[in-house]
Length: 119
Image 1: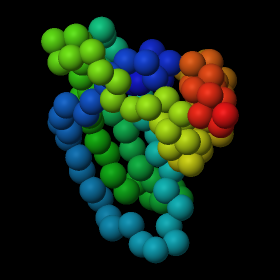
Image 2: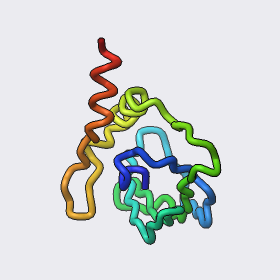
Image 3: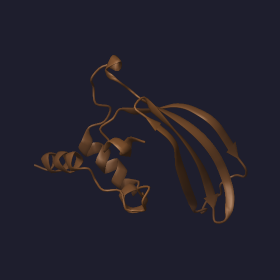
């Protein structure tokens, strides 16, 4: 959801509408997540997703996100260089895909913040 605004929007988890866990995850299980964006609006979004261990369905969920406007103050939720480090550690740019199947690109403002932090 945040990627849709190049990580500039202030997006927070508002609600977990549904979460069904079918079986426990065991040490060594390799989990694969698939998330589908159901709706995206200026004030929020709804996604649904699944988690698999191999070909076994582990969990299903539906989450609602809110996009905070200026009524909540004009503050940044995350420092861009630190947030970029987190996203890279999660390998978002290696595995994340756009709706067309392309890799998610690192937004220029995050690269600039990273370069400035390295000085």
